[in-house]
Image 1: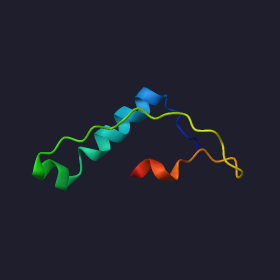
Image 2 (image 1 turned 90 degrees about the vertical axis):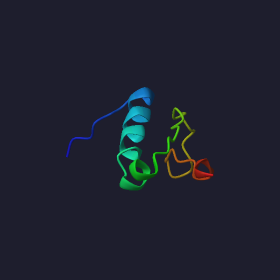
Image 3 (image 1 turned 90 degrees about the horizontal axis):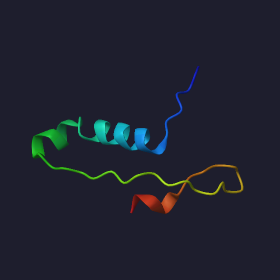
Image 4 (image 1 turned 60 degrees about the vertical axis):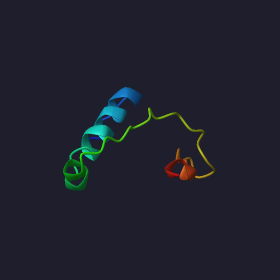
Length: 55
């Protein structure tokens, strides 16, 4: 399976698009701001995840 690589702006736009298509968001008419992703240093498992970023 080929994975599509997105730059930070493209990733931000895609997440924003997906969030604003959720039925609950559409019904409530809320606007959610999606911040631009920032590069994280790889952890010991070579993953670039920031677990505290979902606060």
